[in-house]
Amino acid sequence: MRSFAGTLLVAICCFSHYCFSQSPSLSSLYDVQHYRFNIELSDMSDTIKGKAVITLKLLQPASNVLFDFSTTGTGKGMHVQSCEMDGQVVSATVKEGNEKLDLAWKDASPAGSTHTFTINYQGIPEDGLIISRNMYGHRSFFADNWPNRGHKWIPCIDDPADKASVEFIVTAPEHYRVVSNGILVNETGLEGNRKTTHWKEEVPIATKVMVIGVADFAVELAGMVKDSIPVYSWVYPENKEKGFYDYGQAKDVLPFFIDYVGPYGYKKLANVQSKTIFGGLENANTIFYSETSVTGTRRSESLLAHEIAHQWFGNMATEKSFAHLWLSEGFATYMTILYMENKYGIDTATHMLKEDRQQVMKSPVTYKRSVVDETDNYMSLLNSNSYQKGGWILHMLRRELGDAVFHKAVRAYYSQYANSNADTRDLQKVFEKVSGKNLAVFFDQWLYSPGAPKIEVRWFKAMKTGKTVVAIRQTQEKGFVFPLTLKFMERSGKSVIKKVDIINRYTEFEFDLGSNIDGLELDPEMSLLFSADVARQLTK
Image (tube, rainbow, N blue to C red; front, side):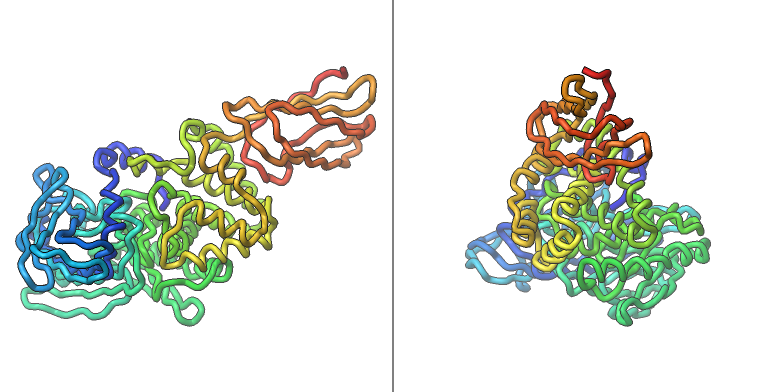
């Protein structure tokens, strides 16, 4: 996901009041196997009609199940009409502030048993499905489930730890085109100038990236990747030439990640102009972009790369909980840098890393919260810890392990956790296994503790020995252990490189460099997340 600063601020202010944990324990009680949603939309009203058919396996004996489902709102909300289990009527009770739907039956079912629940409902979505008008004044319907807003319009286990295959069967006025996850099964014309569009995704995905988009679209096949993956552009007809040009870059981005990370997990990629509240939202194989992303200038290449990278990190290999969101956003951030480095060269990557480092070091969240963050205000996780600091942590791992080992570890992590879920310790174990190194200190200080090194560096020539002395003091609250490269510049234009390990809060190093040293540069290869105050002192 990428977000425009203003949009993100509005999102946090407007949605943080209910973007809280939806009982993460639900995913430990049940394992949803498949969702089938029949959704009816109308131009006459914002009321939607829904039928959810949910197949799940009980992980423990139970005589009831709970679904995340919002049944009231500020004049809006879903209203349950009937519920069945395996074709038999069951009682339905609304619980937990109208955010849970409890379906109960008489005799307990054993662990491991599979059941199908059918829920018929209707109402005006409070959120999750945005019903509005696009920038050209035309009516549209766009799902926007992240982080846990899906239950505002579909009953589900609204938790990234629970992944399932999904079908959307959408009935709407025939002038609309409908896009969704997976492959188009069929379109069927109906009486009354309506039609039904059926999409099916067989790969298990989390509810946060399940989606439908219903609008007046122009659609283009931008190209085929690896001779088997169609890449589509879905844009508003009014800006289709610009949109097809901008989104057409996706067919050139996708092959990089296939080659670098591993096989693409889905059967298509659609890039969709939409009303998402975010700059981009990585819905599985059906990415939504802000409607203002279309400019005809291809200025959104890094945005496309970021969202496409999510198809591997966040969608296929999914974080176990939002506490580990950096496994999604940090990876997408750094994979984008790798893509840009591959296409435009190291100078472009260095510039991006420098900008990201500056943002991290000036952000208050860096020093208040760790990257692995257990907050239940998920919108607040859209910060520099999850994105830029997470990306920088991967960059430092690359520097620590070397390009070849880092690349091997990334591929191993993805291979192990594709179609599954992982947390930060899982990533650590994979990287340690591949590299043969103990990375406990690295992960603990960079991911489980707040902060980053702020160092004060004073250097001078010692009068008695003639050696160059560099004194380094860490001034942040908690000390870090890290390698640091020192580049000494001579008057002749030549340079001398020295590498040191910073272990203590204050350390002095002496170097016999002669009398021609005229300058000192820290971290010349852009390998460390830090800030520094460097000054030369008179000879002591």
